[in-house]
Length: 95
Image (tube, rainbow, N blue to C red):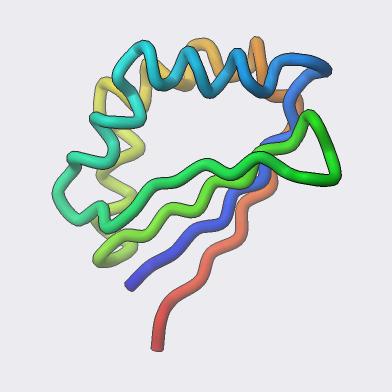
């Protein structure tokens, strides 16, 4: 299993608005329905009101890489910069 932990630092006051837009546009459901996606979940930080943790679990890295080029993921990238000022990504693989 291939897992990614992504920390998004949102612009002040934009955290909830960003997640609401992803949900309203159907992007979260589309990603969760992708072949090879085991889970795709957002968590709000308890210590930073502008931070989101995304945990993505995929059957393998190659499947996750295909996800990046799908239309709903590309759509997300068109507006992400309006809400997110920085992103930190860490990759893990279950052994």
